[in-house]
Length: 351
Image 1 (cartoon, rainbow, N blue to C red):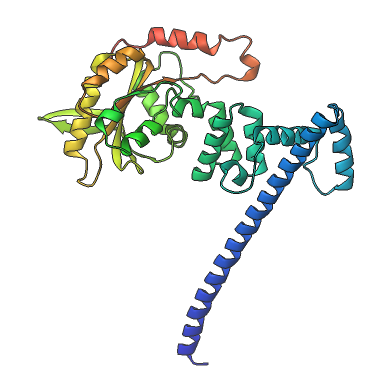
Image 2: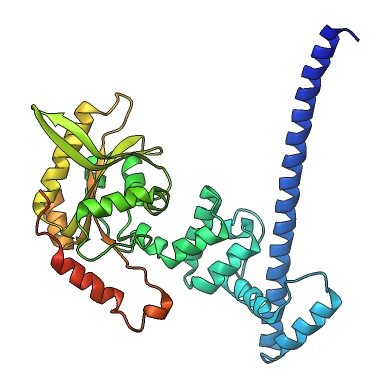
């Protein structure tokens, strides 16, 4: 074989191998998904049969222990027939009485995700919302658990009464996406701040833990910088934190206030947004939006402050939780007490 033919063969083989590996991986994923779908459907059918028998045959709750024992003996290689899992199957069937494998988001989730939703979420609408988020963003079970424990559905779905002027200042569907990306409150429980923490200290900690901060902000945020300098009229200013949102296709200015919201804060943020639009924004970018993160917020006051502001912005609260070892919790003050003392020590104004 000539050197030329050898090179050609190597090139053809590499391409051939690449195609085969892609096909095998695709088939493996399809097989895993098919097995998962069949397992989920089986669990729903078992739960449904348990419900029917308990309703019609008047079987008591003790039947679950008997059934668990018999199924585990009959199928020792399977681990899904514990009493607790049989209860989840029954709850699954009760929650989704018309369940079918297909378009329903929950049916495309692994059983571990479904079990977590059944145990932690009581409202079916919230079930469906979390299921769609898992499919869209590929959340692992641990990430899903974090979001549930931090009440992401309530904070991001509008149940927490978000304050913004996005609907008035942005065209649809950008306004809807901007509103959906806003949370209230934001939870920074990954920070371990000392008493008397100022805004700059909190900013520094947030950027030090940027991965967790981005997770809390939500999908689509990319970090640009902290204390970003910008010159206007020969004077220098610094933006607390600057991000770029990949889905909104715009810059996002985040201003942090370690105190209660004041109407003048909206004017300051409006100034920064105008400056970013003029000095940093590219022609293809959408208008810059702003988020004011305050330690507390009067909803009516914030709504009035945003009513005639020209730039799109929202106002949200944040929660700064002190993390303490469990063995010290009995001897140390509560988180609420610490935050109360912290608030009393914070400066009255930032600039």
